[in-house]
Length: 300
Image 1 (cartoon, rainbow, N blue to C red):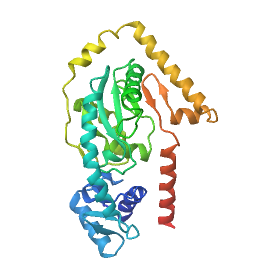
Image 2 (cartoon, helix red, strand yellow):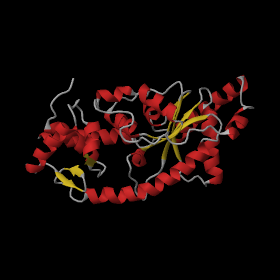
Image 3 (cartoon, helix red, strand yellow):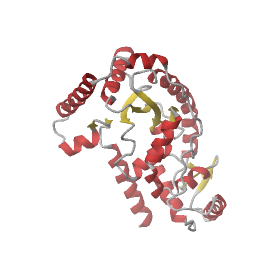
């Protein structure tokens, strides 16, 4: 059921993206509102009133709070850099899709939102065949270390899931936002399965649609080379190898971060048969804490 759009709904959305110096367009605001809206004309009417009362400002079709001077220009600069990075990411996806057991390639992080900074990485999300995630991950990490000199900038491989574990467990605002912006590069059908498996994000963004921000279907042709490389890695021995590679990484994370509790280590460096996640620094909690602080200041 649609509800009237309140000014607070718009401010809550702008405040989150303000953390990243990222003003929003009207279209982005509509799909990310925390309430099911009657339609975009209703949003336009509320935005017009907020502009008139100087609660928000508009520059280059982007909306932000008046205290966020200059971030529209920042976003435009970052968009220009992102266009170059997207071309690189599509080339890298052509490389990644040829590795054994890769079933889909997507982009998350800054680039999925259409922006990039000089220091940002290209964050790939890799979906693999079940019971082969750790073999796939090990081959890709080995390729990065040997042929790319372990560079993360254009080949950041921090997140892997398999086709049996598409639904993400961390159901918070940060995770929902990242899912909402994910960009498909290879296997559009599996991307849609991933989005359907995480339809819970519409509890937070009722107006959201899977193709809200990215309608390009990417490259969907499976590699012949991949089929040939996979042929020898079938059977129970490969199941055992996959499990051993997972246990090896669990031991590696424990050795590298001995001061972390088991719960903290699992949160930052998740290693299960269907998921590999390596995000140091507890970034999502930091962002959510900053967001809560902005909300408190706004309501003060």
